[in-house]
Image (cartoon, rainbow, N blue to C red; front, side):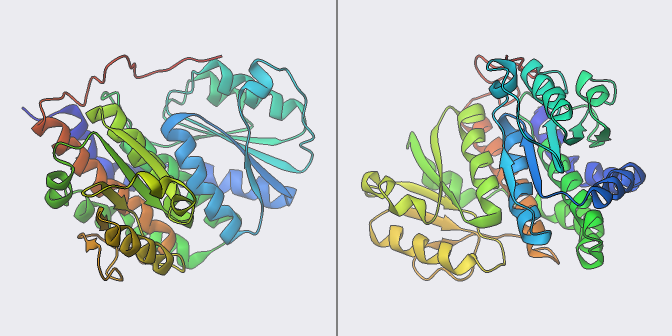
Length: 340
């Protein structure tokens, strides 16, 4: 029987298409308000997969708009009650449920301290949606599997459309319009060679660089959530500053590369780790010693990470099922995590 996770992965293309069609007007309203503010800082508030979406948006905002982006720990408000200087700042809060108390507290605090607040959520009636100046639905539809898949992709796509509208970036917006069709191709890839290489191993690394660091982080989380594997995510630069020491013969490594200026650097690290005996796979044809895996590229390099994570989701669902693990019900986890 097909898992809920698999069904929701297959829904990703339609969910993104729905977002682009039905969410466009509200996103334009928020973008216009942000353009009028002319912010000097963007802060993000999120946890888990939503925080990985914020990492993705951090790189995108800094590259597209030249605005620095900082992640604020929700405990600054929920536990420490500390005020922040957020005049001419934008706060982007991301939560698929919109119900976590600490995310809500931090969003309220950002508004109190002078920020224009934007909420990306899958629940238009959630407390977070009511707390923000500009609530934006990600239009993912019901997501029943505990492991987030389509809500990660739609959160990231919604945020990227917002950035494209702020910068009035027509080429990026055109590339976004083509994304659903490319996602339909990406979810068909499930990397059997990667699944085979992981085999009996209980630990592995995922790598990213620049815009793909977020999907490396998301992949490492999904290895833990769905397959009970110990996976650690690193920048392909950072992995050489210590973590490389435990890469023994056969150690699995999965590198995520987009078609941008960081691809060559990641490919070089992948090849180096291969020389050290690791089993390294990368979404790049630039590798010479590591193994390139099939991947779909977009019309804009900033969108490549979303296509890569869609293929990864298909891979990890297949891996979990083949090992007798139910990815819909990870141990000790609930769909909505409420932290303070």
